[in-house]
Amino acid sequence: MAPPVITVTRQYASGGAAVAQQVAAGLRWTVIDNEFVDEVARRAGLAPALVAEHEERAPGLLERLARTLAVASPEMLIASDAVPRAEQDEATIVKLTERIIAEAAAHGRVVLVGRGAQALLAQRPDALHIYVVASKPWRIRLAVERLGVDPANAEKVVDDTDRRRDQYVRTYYGRHRHDVVNYDLVVNTEKLGIEGAAALVVAEARRRQWR
Image (tube, rainbow, N blue to C red):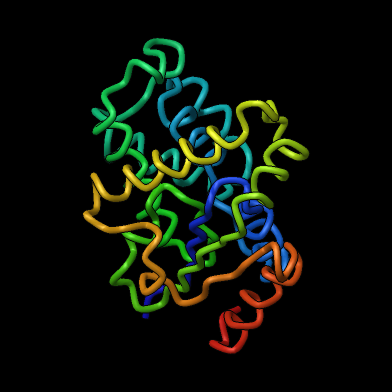
């Protein structure tokens, strides 16, 4: 049986990343979010001497993923000091992201945030797929107060970010990100709060006897 994983898909500024962090803390799992994926890619693309520096320490999940990618997918690597990420072919970045998600999921006991993980792992038996939502006015307020978005542009940023995320999943996986039947739990952070939403996810993981 595959080790368990949790995927968190979120509407922009719904607090989904914070929910994921609290779920991971409650279960003592690892969060794989955008920063983690970028750091794995960066380390995997480092010069061998720099990678060796990381290997002098006991390798955590991040180092193990970076080493696996460096060995298995050298043609995909994003060399941070050679080619700016923005100039990389999008399909290459998608493949690299998929590889990181697949390797992390094989390790298990991870909370995967965004990046189409719910679509990529849709057929995985030991996966709990979460969709974090909230009303648009609440998300606009959160975008301004917590994410530092300019109030004059906040509604446009919320709409554009959700549209880009929807398009990513539709383009690469042929799925509609906002279709609630793709998820095991849909949690509304406006109604439940961040802590309440995270507590429901942790409770379901424990009900499944995931440790």
